[in-house]
Amino acid sequence: MEPCQEFSIEQLVMMVSKAENQEIVEVINSLSIRRYLASSDDIRLCPTPGCKYAGFIFEDELANCSKPLECNLCYAKWVDKI
Image (tube, rainbow, N blue to C red; front, side, top):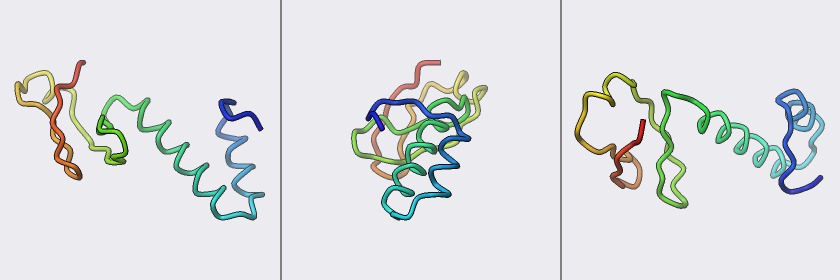
């Protein structure tokens, strides 16, 4: 398996179901969740390297808000570009 190879959801589910090593299962689950979160319009990932927090946000609130977003885990602040 190449390190940057793309997999479909079906392929990932098949790999997880066949995986005997729990570490592999955790890596696949983590990558799948991060991929989903990064592509969601209503979820923002904390931009701080190493922080794994993701928060739900409403686009209409973001458009009308002048305050920066704040991570509930590491407390980093940033302005989101819509």
